[in-house]
Image 1: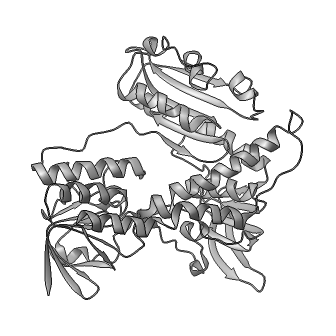
Image 2: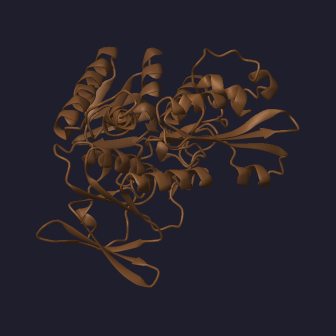
Image 3: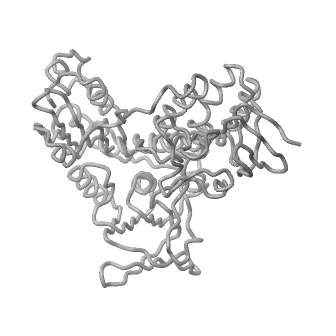
Length: 449
């Protein structure tokens, strides 16, 4: 028996939820399908639980930095208790989300969805037909051509570890590896990162990345660059990782190998070809309204799309709002470029928004660069932060901020002020007139511009 809907949403995370609820509120008959627990990556397996864990390590790091500055006594993380605390934020999400959707009148299905026709899906033993279908299934770890890749532990599994192994090895030098490496190191583990390129965290300012790399090594994270992993072998005591550094073969040992080498649009298994949906390595190909370029019944939002948006939760939420508007009002709201700050939640944190120096130069912008070591500024010295830097780019012709790059414990909050200035093209001279509460991190903005 086939069930008919006005809208079927595949995926229960941020990219799908807004559209589902808005269309349901407008009177549409809506269904939501997810083969994983309802709630999506961010709430269950990504940013939210990660931030809970990182938050605890911030306190540990603070106590260690302030020894002999009024603080006495050692503290340590008890990993199992930390994970139990994390679960208080995640365990009730799927059931709560499912009940909330059903209460609103949205039908929920737990199972794998795959296309059988342009607007028909197979879910378990049922066939669902949608006037429109929104694909919002996010991303998954990219497959690596490494012999022994079946021994990988993935980020979602790392966030469920009941006990933290003594020796960890991360493959890849991106967000996941650096954030989890800092978390694990401050929780007492020995940590290695193997990165095939010469520069990790390539989306961020290279000078500040170098500062973070130096600091990471200083706290005991063993980072190996230009190291290409060829094979993972299981041993009686753990794992052996074999890689090449130039012409030299290297061996590394660990109790756990974590995949941190990037993610890709999660389109495998959807049988997109049955619905004539075009997709490439960057995701589902959509027009400016987030509608499939080859199947008008289908829209896509979030990490699964081949748009220029960053793979971040706020972008997924924004795109879900856009899809809802275009479904309810006809294609009238195109996706527009949005200023989007991003942060690596290491300690110190690395944050960025707007243009880099290279990008500003390529656009022939006459810019002023304020590159400042703020380690000895009151804001950072009062908590004994060992490294704090800022890079601010100002378009001298138009007197507007065009880029900001920060490395400090407060970078994640401070970057939002610069994002606001860039988004609304606020004149730098006007931003400098703002009276901020003092002494706060934001009150330093006047001296950074």
